[in-house]
Length: 289
Ligand code: GLU
Image (cartoon, rainbow, N blue to C red; front, side):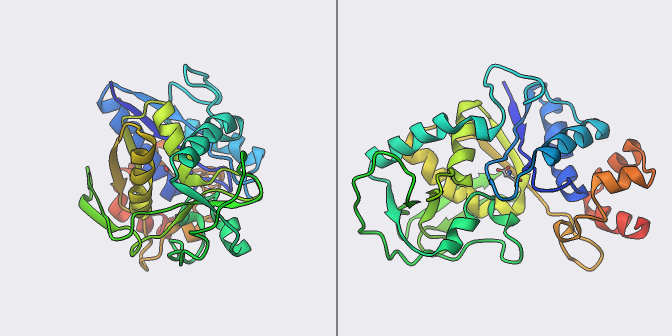
């Protein structure tokens, strides 16, 4: 049984770049006669807002994307809003801690701000720098994660490999392409990598469809999946939508938000027709804006 998911973060209005990914996820779930789950990834307390969560559901519906499980629809794996799923993440943190896979880190505040969001949301740099490992040896007597940044100790030099259903064979070297990554922030917010792995497993997701900017995060997540003994889903990372200057649409958020296109009188059919041609999607709306 195919189970897919769309996992928007309510940190702004959805733009056509997001919509292209979600449309593809919807199409793949439908083609497989499967179930599509909508998950509200609202963990980042500084950037997530309830009005954006309402807007994303409304905009996705307007576009014609249908899901069978979600915050609005309920389902067997409720709740579907990450802020309401803390206990699930905490259980996984405890298992990582017991297994000796994570350590407390007291390094800079900057990392703190970065960890709740998926890496591509962190503006100019699509990914975090490799952590130099300063706190690797640090030991504390903590039964709860709050108060430290908890990092997953990656097996240095190990090649993490997977075959992406769209991008083909992938390989990232732990400790070189990415370093010890955060699983819990010191302000007691679970980090993106841990939450996504815990949720995809708990919601029995069989295929993850998302943007190619998260390919490297998949390598991190595979290490977490292995450490926690979870089932590995299939991955389909789609091409990122770019405008005619080759710039990612994410950076042109406002002009190309679904909200704005609706306001300008585009119909869902027109937007979907453009989404069906991701290679020329940026140009299609370039002309329109
Ligand atoms: N909430 C994440 C985002 O908006 C989802 C990433 C994922 O699909 O794993 O990018």
